[in-house]
Amino acid sequence: MRAALPVVKNRAWVLNPIDTFIASEHEKWGLKPLPPVDKRVLLRRVYLDLIGLPPTPEEVRAFLSDHSLNAYEKVVNKLLASPRYGERWGRHWMDIWRYSDWYGSRETDELFNSQRHIWRWRDWIIESLNQDKGYDRMIMEMLAGDEIAPDDPQVLRATGYLGRNWHISSRNAWLQETVEHTAAGFLGITLKCARCHDHKYDPIAQEEYYNFRAFFEPYDVRIDRVPGQPDWTKDGLSRVFDSEPREATTAPPFLPAIYRETYRFIRGDEKDPDRSKPLSPGFPEALGNHEIKIQPLSLPLEAYNPDLRPFVRI
Image (cartoon, rainbow, N blue to C red; front, side, top):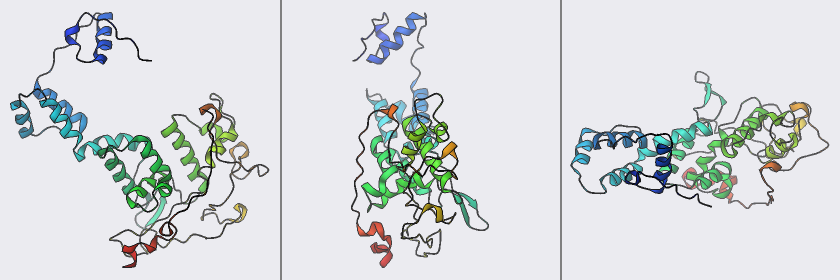
């Protein structure tokens, strides 16, 4: 239900319904709004806000000489259509989603955290904003781009969100990062406390933390060949994964066992899982009653064997 618009005395200042609420607060506190700024200052403000750069002298002169009623609107539309817009505002989402360059040893060419091609995810964020892609679609592509568009390399870049959490020596630390930052970045809640015990302040049980983790338990990172990079020994392209399921207890420490079950870790200790009760994917009950349907998905052959892509076979 929409709130009723307040009645204000300074009707001349009101240009849209939102202004009535601001004007009401002005009058409540005895404040008087400042007069509109001149066109030169207005142009500089909108440039810095939308693309993070000031206008050029030529752009200032063009705006000052444009006396049409929609002169400002034309500038805003031009800036929103600029590639610089995605670069300016993409950085805010990169902070929330934890974009960073890969971490490792340049001298030994060893990767410790994240992925070398993580910049492709950065470009996807910028391009998605410039394309006005829906926020819901962006979330779907980051969390499941390999399932909803397995043969689209442009969408597959979005799964860099998951690859960002990769850790060389601890799959558990990798999944902890994924669970906790997915909850914080998309759900606006912290699940970190529930990893070791029932949450002390929020209605989230420890078991629900591991239900949420079960969504991510099967995933792994694969580095495919890309056009212009024919040397398959570079950038981790020669990494080999097992094709057969393995028991979690026998998995080598540096090779992820992607087929393992999800168990609640007693007191959060990964060495002490409660194997009496494998856990299925689920949401904390406090977030609502969601019916989850897990169904098998048919993927194209190239999704299983990306070396079948035409540019690789040429």
